[in-house]
Image (cartoon, rainbow, N blue to C red; front, side):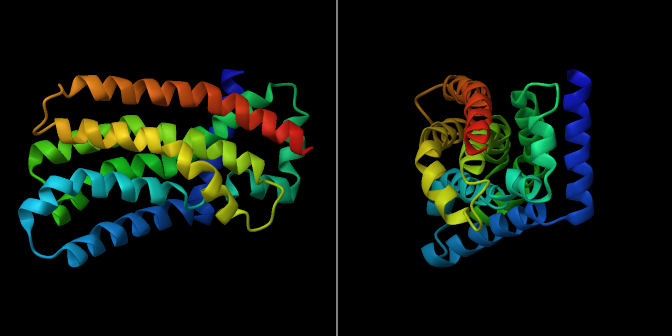
Length: 222
């Protein structure tokens, strides 16, 4: 089973490298939001540094939606999903592998690029490191939550808008604790580890519940 998951992850990573698209688009969209917000707020560096973690986290939430609608839809269109569903491995393993590959091509690059983009919102070194760590811990929750919506809309052409309406409200708890953890890294009454552990718990819960729910949605859509 582990070998199957590893093979599916490798397959999706190779396809993402050949086709491109969602990972690069997510980074570009992330950069666009982070770059435009300072123009709207003005040249107040103190204000930018204070709300910088919130800007980065909100940008990450919106960027995660890029390409989510194609997570299962591409396999649904070419018939690969039917083969995966009929394979002798649990469908949950297939979902776990595909979501992991999607996070490696979207969520992980966003977390790694966040310190560089943090310069645009006047974050210091500590704030950059704290925000990057929270994104690294919290973006899996966003991806697994989004996978449920992707599974529900897999058979719907151009279901991206429906997917966003479905999953964005479910991403709010992760956004709240992610911003709280990032802000507590520099100046906060709550220790940094407390919201970070809550954020890690949300990612673990989303991994379990999201995998099972996405697999159930795919079976239901048959």
